[in-house]
Image (cartoon, rainbow, N blue to C red):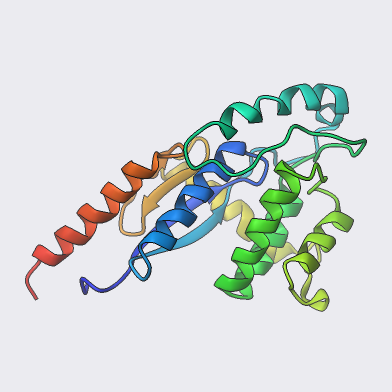
Length: 213
């Protein structure tokens, strides 16, 4: 592999995980500060694969989301706000993951636009990202064509989401965020510090440069 080829990472993430938002922000920074040297393949993980009605108690959920503010104090953290308003919290992860798979099919630019809006909608705007109506709004806010919004019952998209989740477990990712280099077999779980990410990238590039040919 050429030393000029970007290092490709596979990232497993769930939209309902605040640590995934933190991890994504650090990866966005890595990409911005090392242009052309790194690429990411974002894959689905299901922290909540099925609706959980009991989790939709707004008062209990508001208390839970105040814990997000501790994550907001981490280095490189994006903005977090505790849940506010009367909207019910998301019931499960699958609808948002289906929508994100459809965005992947539209290309990297489309997925990134959706990714940034999806995280912000949930963690700063208190929006139910398991609601089809809300997901349609986010899709349009990401400047994606309304007629390309997916059917949330699309069997192929659902199967791909579940396949990602199963693959993550095969690679040792029992939680998220989880990250591995594309050529590796096992993923590392956790929102790695930015310094760890840069060191990993630098060492990978250095090893490539030492390989003859």
